[in-house]
Image 1: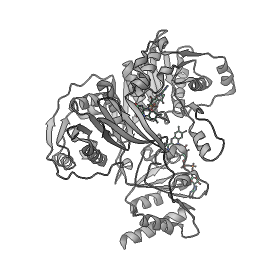
Image 2 (image 1 turned 120 degrees about the vertical axis):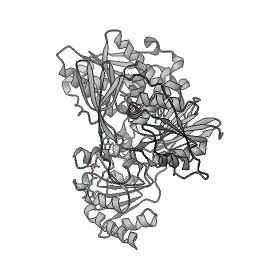
Image 3 (image 1 turned 30 degrees about the vertical axis):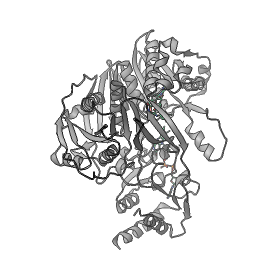
Image 4 (image 1 turned 90 degrees about the vertical axis):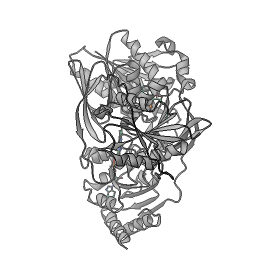
Length: 319
Length: 264
Ligand SMILES: Cc1cc2nc3c(=O)[nH]c(=O)nc-3n(C[C@H](O)[C@H](O)[C@H](O)COP(=O)(O)OP(=O)(O)OC[C@H]3O[C@@H](n4cnc5c(N)ncnc54)[C@H](O)[C@@H]3O)c2cc1C
Ligand SMILES: Cc1cc2nc3c(=O)[nH]c(=O)nc-3n(C[C@H](O)[C@H](O)[C@H](O)COP(=O)(O)OP(=O)(O)OC[C@H]3O[C@@H](n4cnc5c(N)ncnc54)[C@H](O)[C@@H]3O)c2cc1C
């Protein structure tokens, strides 16, 4: 079984590897022999070293630059780099789902996205997922000889390999297809300080109940070293940018701790956070649906509850 | 120009919630048109309305069991011109690729009467939620894919979209024919009015079988699916849930809870 090659598509931004890549490498090690696939510009040496530390024996590099933004192109490149892999792991994002779809069509692979884990049973990849807004757990078998699994961040704990590999850099040349789409403008979204929302171990989210003032939500996120999330009502109001929206049409998050402040818990919102480890809610309305899924709920005004909690947590940190 | 909109029949999200709230117990087949497909229908109708009268026709297609006709009926009520329901026992259990194959064949069937310029889909179906279908359908049809559009403009045979990815906002263009998937930011769906609801009653729905659209039964359905759900169980309810009412020390309780759980 350990001969199974598991290719992991590296997520990186400005040469910095995103944490879920290390989680995917950790998962890959439990199934077979991990190789990392790097697309874009050449990886820096420290990135290669870090991939090796998490068990990648090779880093297969496709120096295709910005062309990697085209899902079909990225898929062709990934196919060239992962031809020997029985399983390809990607980090679940809108873009990687499109890459996975093209790759599946090109290679007859089966795909499961938004996975919480995977293992190999009798030579077939089996995938764990929560569906229907995290109200059901399912196990899906991929029947095809080749499998592609898109894993959600925070579902595997990233741990370095017992014996770090010195990853060998292998340049891969891929024949890239013509594409019909032209990407005429790319405006980067400024990256906020701290951990990205989808990867954060702690998310503190504010909704309409904040009335547009995110100061307390940000302070609580800060003291818990977490990221800031929001409901759609809050992003629609323009109180906070769209990138912060958690939910079925926004970001799906699975942090160890999710704190919902002034969020009613609409089914669309729950679908994007219900699989979180521990859920805490602060809401003035005792009947708010968010309390149905909260491990700990405080019925109260967030303007009273949050400052006191922040002070107590700061005191705990210092003492 | 012909514009095809794909609409999926999905279990009603709100009905699940009212079930848990202890209200009306509904049957499992209580469903509706996928909410996000309302944005797809709206995009198609807006485009049609921006063109001179008679220049564009909008078709809605759904693939699903007998109940799924409700999805295209809803689209008719919103104002689409034609409704197509592909229904065949052999489709049951299809994966994304099987579904895309069937939808592509249905689009080609419509093309027999004249070219299709645009296929518009929702960004995700709120049950399967894979967001893979639009890419798979564009690949099957071998046309350009403009996915996750938060804006859409069509001029001189070219479609232009804006796409908001977490790391960047892209502007992407392609010549028609193209497939566009729209997000819920793209527009605000209209409500069906009385006049449209009445008019929709007399509009026919074309029902097609796999044989009608020339799809081999062996290539779709559960047998051809590359993925099989082998276990499914409801998520157990969260245990030992606590709820306190703030009487001046709610914040302290919250902090204590986090500290005791090792989360702070
Ligand atoms: C197709 C579709 C897709 C959608 N996708 C998403 C999605 O991905 N994500 C998402 O979030 N939404 C989504 N929505 C919207 C969703 O249905 C809800 O409308 C939204 O989540 C509500 O946001 P909210 O909880 O902030 O606001 P509300 O529902 O208005 O709730 C505000 C809450 O704040 C409480 N409150 C008020 N004042 C205070 C106070 N001082 N202290 C404490 N509590 C207070 C209130 O009691 C209330 O419970 C979608 C909707 C549709 C139709
Ligand atoms: C809980 C669940 C999990 C699943 N997991 C997988 C999986 O891991 N891999 C897999 O290959 N398949 C999976 N399927 C099957 C898959 O959902 C169906 O094949 C489905 O028809 C297409 O995928 P989607 O619902 O995810 O659509 P999405 O790609 O999320 O939908 C995007 C848009 O495509 C259009 N569309 C989708 N389906 C139809 C339809 N039947 N008729 C008309 N328009 C449609 C709609 O416009 C929709 O807005 C799953 C289904 C369910 C219910």
